[in-house]
Picture 1 (cartoon, rainbow, N blue to C red):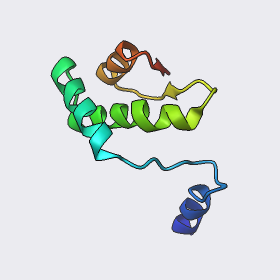
Picture 2: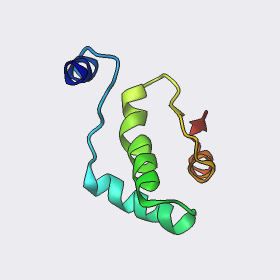
Picture 3: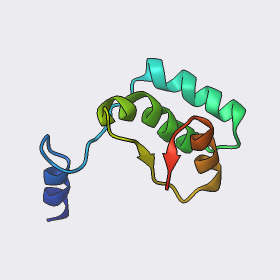
Picture 4: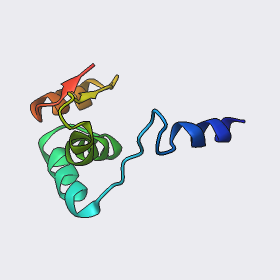
Length: 84
């Protein structure tokens, strides 16, 4: 039941878009974020994917990063991403 719902939500016409991690773009940016901010590795990877893939997906719409982590929110703000 859960997996069926997940598959439906992540389908091409579902409400959730899964973003592909392009290592050539994401890893250098994630590394720079790790060096510049006090982040955990996965937090830096999430921000790098948001900056490289999610912005293109959002198009003209604004991109808002949802996080409960203050360090990730601060790094996102430094990158010019809106946070909530």
